[in-house]
Amino acid sequence: RDVTHLRSMILILKPAQLLKRPKTGSRFSRMEGMVKIFKNLVPAILLSVAICGCSNAAEKTERRSGTTPKGAQQGMKTYYLGRFAVDVPADYKLEMRSQTIRYAEVVDYKWQTHGNHEHERNELWANKMSEIARLHKPIDKKQIIIEEKDLKGLGSWAKAVQYYGNYLVTESLYWTVLVDYGDVGVMLTIDGADNDMTIANFTNILSHYRYGALDQSARDSFYLNYGKITLPYLEQEKTYARFEGPMEMILRIEMAETHKVEEAGVMDRLVASLAVNFAPGVDVDKIRSGKRTVAGLAGQEIATQMSDDNGKELFFAWEYLGKENSGEYPEIKIGVECPAGNQKEKLKVWDRVLDSFRPLYK
Image (spheres, rainbow, N blue to C red):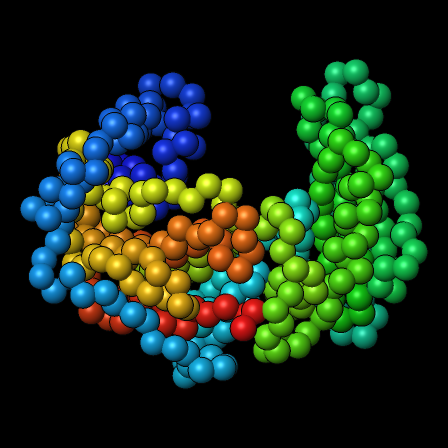
């Protein structure tokens, strides 16, 4: 759908990423052409379009989100995501979460079995081993798994497996590790060409995991579901979370380090998309747009209603472009998409979420 394509262009994909997509005749080739035009748009053109078609006097005043006190707002639940926290309506469900720190994908689990959880833990590990064994085997290797072994000095129990996780790049060896910390388990996956460095890296990460105390802010900590890794930013940090709630609202939060701050923000991309008629079948009605400071970070916000032959959708987005090579100031994208209707109520939810977003390092 054209609405989906336009929404993705505005929020999710960067011009550099789009240009790497294969030219298959799909929507991505259409996007590529659009982005090539977009990259050639001079600031004067963007400015004239913004003034004529996407701005009004009321929006020239910068919006500044309020400060949320420690603890969740009434009717909201606090989620700790990397080096930030956010309050989300309590009736929203966390559908997906993924996190990376220092090149390692990490997730922690709270054991469902009270008391003796050995069977649950062993079953989790057996399922992971079975999943790895089903991977595509490199043509010049006899088997996927290189070795499985017990690890000492991590939690009360730890298992690790080394394997070929990418059949096309056999020089990069993968490790998956499961550690039992008592009330929780932590699973980590990492790969690298220098095996000794990879082992040292994942051992360091897992040695710094601390269960609980999520409500205690710490400057050099990266927060997971149930605990945190007490390490400062080094490189390669990412957090992604997807929530689903009433009124068919889908909330996405994405944070990642940036090595080059993009010049174009979310509002700029919307203006450019409209200027080059990227999605000719889509009508975009602007609800509000402009600068908005969230968690002390100066970003851009847009709230629109998009419509095509299939119906109408609301799309809200806030973006902070970040600072280079920073864990405390990553690139941040927060967005909501949902069918049209109940606009005031949905904007109220959106504002409460943005107002609650806050750093955990202060």
